Image 1: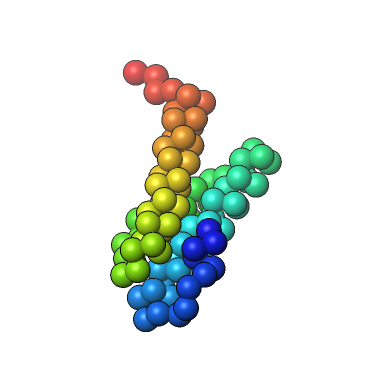
Image 2: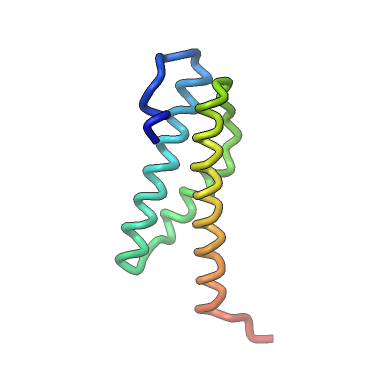
Length: 92
């Protein structure tokens, strides 16, 4: 997270990648709050949309940080999917 805040402003791609990483972090924080209050549907959709975006940073350190954030977001989406499946199992 600090790596997102550090660094001189590079090109437009770097700014977009940095903003994307910050949006992912905000969505993860929002998901945490929503799950604590037994919600999360809209937040999960937003997080899925953000993780599906294909923005790449040319700065290797920034790319690594964003990759780590994206991985965490995907793990949270998978966790929420498994939890939802447990709550409403398919009846065949």
